[in-house]
Length: 121
Picture 1 (cartoon, rainbow, N blue to C red):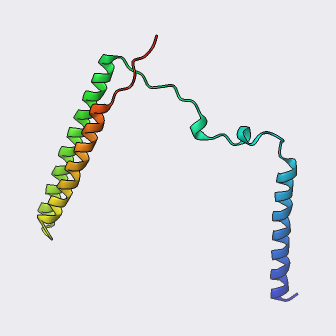
Picture 2 (picture 1 turned 120 degrees about the horizontal axis):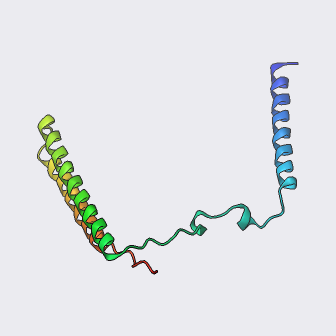
Picture 3 (picture 1 turned 90 degrees about the vertical axis):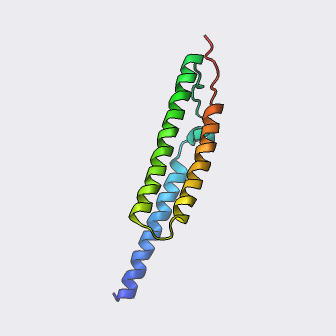
């Protein structure tokens, strides 16, 4: 056999095996409803997050403290970069600080709105 004939024979065998596997998968599968075979992640039930007032305020306080720490560290990093690479400064530092302040403002607003419902029972 020439190389071309061996290649075509190998290709035909591979295609035959793929078709055979597909047929076996099609005919052997269990006759279940598609919804029970493939469940959606969004359909899974998760218990609702609930907190008492004291826990809610403690969590909010921790979120705000973490946000303050992250913002402070980001500004420190901007200054470190400025001191190590003066290229196009202070424009780069100002742009980074502006982005950090905007993110801080929006994240702080989200943390202040954090209000899981009161636990029942």
